[in-house]
Length: 367
Image (cartoon, rainbow, N blue to C red; front, side, top):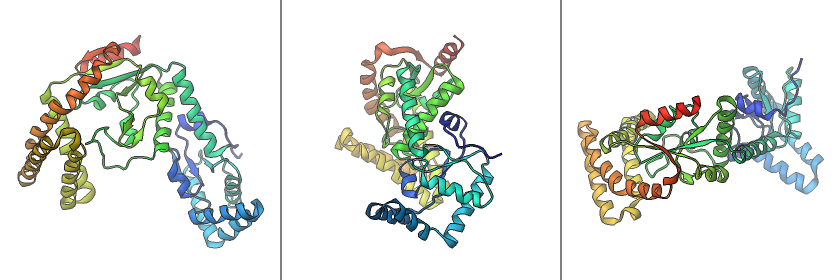
């Protein structure tokens, strides 16, 4: 028996049900869902032309033009793509913007190819509205949040991922949240980021339960902005302040931003181009905070960084980076963090080393 069309949006997101987004690529790239792939009924140009016809001559004329544009070999190729998806993901669904004509036409053509495949009622608009509304309900309903805080380089993300119920905002934003925070994976668009966050909160609440742990973030993670209602709740949540000595923090920063980033660039771009792009990554990150450092301090640190890069390239030794790392930590990042923390002291629930914080989180879960 054919599976029915669905409005069970919670099941779709909790269980990562595969989705086939038949909207045009331009719509897909503006925002979709993590488990969705784009298999459009019309490409961007075809959609644009049909849209003009709709405005000028109405729906029926637009439908007729759509059938003229998507026919013969073009239609056959698209149907083959859809059929391939249905066979690979027999528990999936298809959707368009509102669950209307495009979904129904796609569904009909797949049926003519011998397969009955269900659609999401309400389409993208209903799925997106469900995530927005449900996140708001959870946050307004007192969803328990705890925030991992600490100075730069304390390894907050590493500790976060060891907590009983983590939501990794930086991982979803593909950015570590500082001038040096760019990763090798492009950041998602704002809507994609918001959808990822909402789904993660849903899963943390329904599939794990108990307090949810997040890392202390500013409004922006790279170019991704935290949803306003989540940011407000985070600003009131209890803080778990992670502490490490400067030498350990220096080692963590060197590992993350020097050793691992170089390996990533080389793996992606090859030895020569990878080294060049890694070098540019470090120097550009430092240049982005030039105004806040001041011209003289920026130039001094830039020369230290260049010397460290030259030493690393010549001898494979990244140890020369420790000098600029420690200066930035001690003289730039730490004063900013300490000032910000001084305004949050009433929210501190626990502070200490990794073991102290993790023991505290698991006691909360047991309680």
